[in-house]
Amino acid sequence: MRTSKGRPDKDVRKYFDRRFEFKKDSWNLPASKDVYKENKFIIPDFQRLKDELNGVKAQLNEFDIAEWSNHTKHRDPSTSIISTIKLNFKAELVTQAWCKFYECLSEFSVISKNSIEHTDLT
Image (cartoon, rainbow, N blue to C red):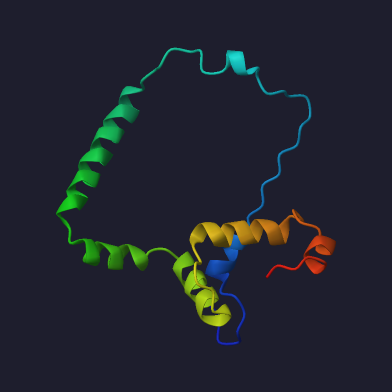
C-alpha cells in the first residue's frame, strides 16, 4: 500500500517500525531441570473463554472454504506487501515467513555486507 506519491502508507509502515530489545542486567535463565515442574493450573474464566472460542471456531467448518479464504485475505494487511514483491521483483515463492526472514536479515546485520558482495548467489 502506497500513498499517491509512492511512499509507504502509515498503516503498513507501523508493522515495520516495531523493535524489541532485551537487555540482560541481572537475570539468568533457569536451569533446564527446573523448567516446567509446576502442576498444571486452570483459571476458570480463561477455560470458559477457551471453550467459547473453540465453539465459534467449530462453526467455521460450515462456511464455504473459497468464500472464507476471500474474506480473510482482505483482513490481512501484509497480503498487499507480498503481492507487491511478487509483482515488482518477479519472485515466485514469497510468503509472510519469507518476508519476515528478509526483514530480519536486512535490519539486523545477520550477514555481513562483505559476505553478500563477495558471494556468488546463483
